[in-house]
Length: 300
Image (tube, rainbow, N blue to C red; front, side, top):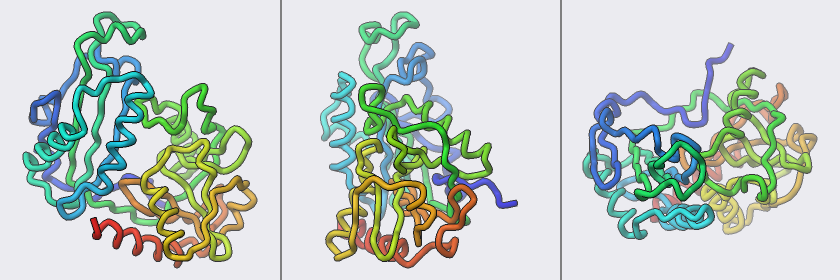
């Protein structure tokens, strides 16, 4: 039986035991990086976040990540309490404190802050936001292609919780991941409300058919930055790419499938619902897109 694999699996790094965490304008040891049980993020999942990756001293596509962070904060009427430049400064302060130069991952989180009473109304958060940066030494190490299982949990309509929103409220995706694990897979493949293939519980999803790259319309998935970079790379390199509705039938018959995300960039998929995709290994299109993406990162 294959070992359990996740799309955020990384090499063990002893340096992560002594990390310094950015918490509300201070950089503190990991053991001291604590927030109140009254914090709206802990109590209600009321907050937004971004994942960032450091390559050779540069945070990949930082402007796009900051755009998404501030847009999400505006959508939930959350004042981050910092300008874009102050967020950049906080990232750099944390990076320097941890002596990181490359192969690092940062999770930047902002909640509405501590509440005066344990109830949901936003007005009960009166002391300002909680702003955290967790930064780890992180070299992705995924020992084999990912196995997916289709799950009953859907990527929903924007009038419930817009799936484009990078919020702390991730229970729907967590339940999808649990369902996939119960089915013997690594991650859950989620459909949209119309039954079309959409995304996984943690990453955006692509297939390759007859030399063309397919992904969902984008209506129900996270507005992934790596996802968009792959689409842009296809267009710039004369690779046919389609944002379209497609079904599980199209997916099972694909030549390749892969996932995209800030952490793993492009991660190959070997099986979906017990069906082998292509050769079951990383395919030539996925390899090519990986190389093109690496060049794009190096050009920053």
